[in-house]
Length: 315
Image (cartoon, rainbow, N blue to C red; front, top):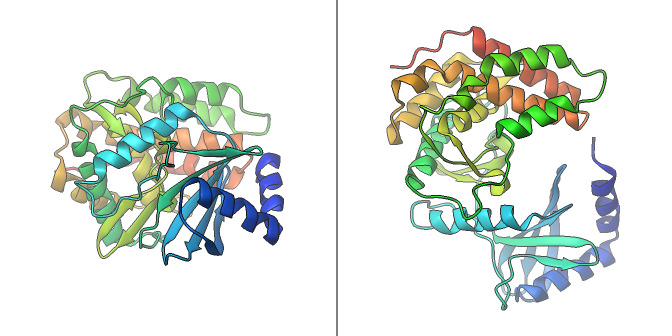
């Protein structure tokens, strides 16, 4: 289900002449040159994404957002800038001549990033790609060890206050009791202060990953935050290692094997990995239910309970 606001923007860009004019205005703002071709990538609940080519034989990614939080944007830019030296694939946001990170005109917010090659993993995700994503996530966590976000207090998808609020405001028809049970049985992964904490991606799923020649790029860094690292692992596994409402334990093992290449899990993290996956599934399921997507909501609900009931052996 696409929100009415996104639908309005989609219909606006259905007009080719208007779309071209707006894209050229954005290109002028960021000094990109003359726009020659425009390809729409996807229509998400939070933004529209376009690939734009210019007369300078360059390609860019333009993200049109429904709303824009400057704190989130500053965090995203900080993450991208910090990853330049450690990641071979990083799509960094561009700035205008005046140093602006975003374009705002006529009710449109837009950011522009460089284009990078790669493909999104296809469900069911192959074992090797589960391994590569796990490995990349650990590298991400290690890259920010001892570092802090410019705006650390911003809520994110996995923030326990945000998850609880989302659960409290779900509409009738949602399996609230079952979702609340999953949340209550898994929230220890978020509340335990003895677990390693740091900068997390916060929303790492297959659509936010690009893979090119065994290198992984992480996209959509708008949900970064500072939480227990195990929450990031759990959220990603709940999506990457599941298919058709089932959790694939072989793929979970492959993901964790990749993760341990760059960061070893402490014993308490190993013991709570099932809870972390369940918590990530509960948070994600609640998000989908909030937007009326009961199919995905039910998927993550089943995956979450599967994680709680599974024996996950981590050497």
